[in-house]
Length: 576
Image 1 (tube, rainbow, N blue to C red):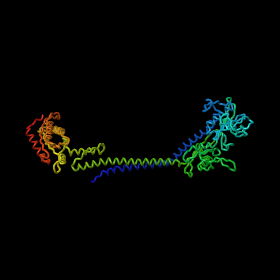
Image 2 (image 1 turned 30 degrees about the vertical axis):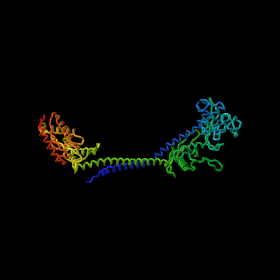
Image 3 (image 1 turned 180 degrees about the vertical axis):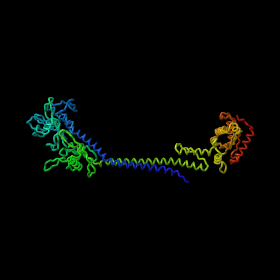
Image 4 (image 1 turned 90 degrees about the vertical axis):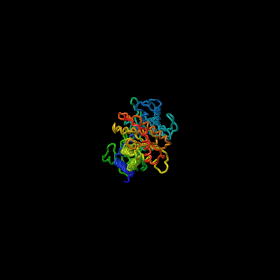
């Protein structure tokens, strides 16, 4: 069987990558489909949020003229920024004081209420009108006088006279409506005499501390300023906001479109269902139809239209102000939200792509790690199958591969070492000798082969048993290995016999020194199983290459020398 580790790695990698890719694609697809199904709910929520925000900000904008009038004749004692005194008195005491307050009001609220004025019950009138071209003061100082407009740079300062006109305060609609309502009230929309622009006026009665009527304070708000404000309330990329009155005429719109058309030389206000803008025209026509048929007229009223721009969601909210009954309408095409949906789908796709890339990288890392370790295990298996011991496998793993590596190491040690003593076995010892001295020609280094025989070891087994004998044999091997040099090797040759291979030997003195250390070490007592054991050993050695180059011939020479040492010593020590 020709085993390739890469095939196992691929078998682990590609199913994993495929699974992650499939999950990522499924999640992306489901997310996109869910987004499509939920776009109506999503659009409805956005419409509700936007409509609420627009209605709130528009109502706040319509409160600015009220603040301007309160600065002229406060409802209670209030602190007004920039006033000459900290507390503004409730009722003005003179025309000069009224003029100061008018200047203050137009200064604070010029962006909405540029023209603020006061008409007294006795027919007098004073007003301050700030505009981009300058400030003018209009005043009428007696009931029978004309109203005069002056250029002015501050309270009490009169410049060039601009014009004079007849002006009856008590006949003005704003004056009459404020007295009739006895409170703040908005006038109907009208065309201003001076600016010729569509305008509406907020007015309030002014009374003194005894509740006596002093007159009426009022301020004008051009519809153009309201349209400019509404145009800033952008609900979406192509969505619109518009306001209609009870008659269906446009009051303000975020679309750049004239609110007045000239018909036969007369200014006629534009109806919402006649607008040139498709969203305004279609949405108001549908709302009007539903209202006529008493269908879906709950507050707020929501509809969906199918237009050339696709589905458009519309919400109508009532703006209630004193004297006004307007409808604020917000229309948002759903296509404006599709970008968000596409962005979400793209984000999910990118997340899926990143997940796939991460999975591939993790898989490649896993493949490399597994392939590397499996290759090492495969090579170790091949060596074990051929009867050779592989190098120890260092795999700090706790998984199956780590367990296999530990088993391989144990099997390898069994092929290399004597299982009892830990010394090299004969086969490994022979391979090591052949690796150093087996090549043809002169050996690269001189050496020696030392033969060690433990004297009367059989008496230990007979007297104490093989368990004690095996333990003693193992300790003897450990002592011998402790005296070897770095490149020397110890082999259990058989029974109680050991071989020592010495390399890089300069002279016999090196061998004699090693033999002396080993003899002295083995002569020391052994504490085994509660017994103090004493034994000795006989040593003999052969020099390489002087006594031979083949292992067998060197063993013979060393064996004979060992027996000579055994005979010469004549020692047979008792084991105690």
